[in-house]
Image (cartoon, rainbow, N blue to C red):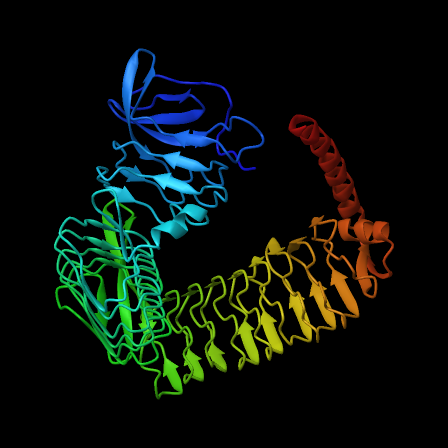
Length: 548
C-alpha cells in the first residue's frame, strides 16, 4: 500500500506560512495565515476498507485554529477508505487527489463548496466516480461541471459554472456547446472523442486549452479561437479534420497541438503575435534567450524553430530554411506524403518530430541532438548518417523496421535506452567521448551480427543486446569502465573481443563467456586500471555501509 508521507511522526517548524502537522491521521500544511491543505494521511490500520474519512472544516494546532481549504495533489492517492466526506470550506481539489482508491464507494461534497481549482483525475479509478456519470449533467459543489452525459445535442453552460472538470464531455454525443463568460480554461481531454462535434467556437476570455482537449474528435472541421487564447496544449486538436486555423496575437505556445491533422493546409497568425509566424509550408516559433557580450552588456538573441509542418499534403520533398536550427516536438508527426527532407542547418530535433511518418531520406549535416522517439515507427527509413550527432534520445529510432545502415561519429556521447531497438541494423560501431550506451539500446535487432563498442565508450547499460540472436562478435574497448551485471544477459552465443587487463576483460571472463584477446593494456594503463579497481572497491564498500 502506498502511503504518501515522509514521516509517521508529528513535526512542525515555524516560518511564515510553513507550518506542517498531523491531526487525527491527516497531515496538513499551511497555505495562508489561517488556512491549511490536507496533503497526506496515516492509515488507521493495515487492513482498511470500511473506514470512513471525514475531512474537518477546521483543525487546531499549537493553539491556532486553521480552516481546511484544500486537498493537495495525490494526497489520498490509492487510499483504502470506503467513504469520504469533505467540508464546505474546500476550495482546492488537487490533481489525482483520490486516484486509484479502489475501495472508495462514496464521496460526499457539499453543494455549498465553491472551487477555485479542480484537478485532473481527482477521483479516477474509484468506484464512486461511476456514480457521477449516472446523471445527465453532474455538478460538484456550486461551480464545477464534472460530467455531461445527456442525450441532448446542444448545451449552454450555465453562468454559475466557472470550472470544467477534466474529461467532462469526453465520449459524449454533444454537437454544440456554448460557453459562458466565466470559463477561462478548457481542461485536458474535455471533449476528447466527441464524434459528433463538427464545429467549436472558443470565445474571448478563455486562455488555456488543455492536453488532448479535442483529440480524436474525428469530425471536427472548424475551430474559431478567441482573442485571449494563449496556450494550446499537446495533442489538443490531434486527429481532427480541421483544414484551417488562425492564431491570435496572444498565442504563446501550440507545440504539438495539431499533430495528425492531415487535412490542415492553412495556418495563419495575427500580425501582432510576437511568438509565431508562418509561410506557405510551416508554422514557426521565435524563441528568445539572454546572453552577455564581452563587456557584460545584456543581449537578447532570437532564433526560430519549425513547430508544425502543414505543406506536406502533396509535396514529397522539403528543405527546411537555412535559419531554422530546431525542429519542434511532433512537427512532422504522422506525415504520410513527405519522403525526403533536408535538415542541413538543423541542430536539434524534438520529441516525436518525425514519428510515424513516411520519411525515407533525411539529410543531417549539423544536427547535434535527437530527442526521444524522434523517428520512431518510420518504417520507410533505410539508412541514416548521424556522423555529427552527439546525443540520440530514448527510442529515437525504435521500430524503424527497415533501418539497415546507421553511421555514428566521434562526437557521440549518449545513446539512450531503446534508441535503435527493433531495427534491421546489421552492423554498428560506436565511438565517442565518454559515451553512454543505455539499456536495451539494440533490443530485438534481429539482423545485427557485429558490434563495436570502441574507444570513448565508458558505460554500457542492461540488456543492450537483448533478443539479438544473430550477433556473432562484440568488441569492447579498454575505455569501458562500467558494465551492469545483466549488460550481456543471454549472450552466451557471442564471441567477445577484448583487451587483456581491461575492465571489460575481467567482467566477461568472470561470466564465463567465450572471448578472444585482441590487445593488451600497456604497463602504465595496467597500473592505472589497478588503482581504479582499488578505488572502486574501497569507495563502493564504504558507500554500501553508509547506505545500509
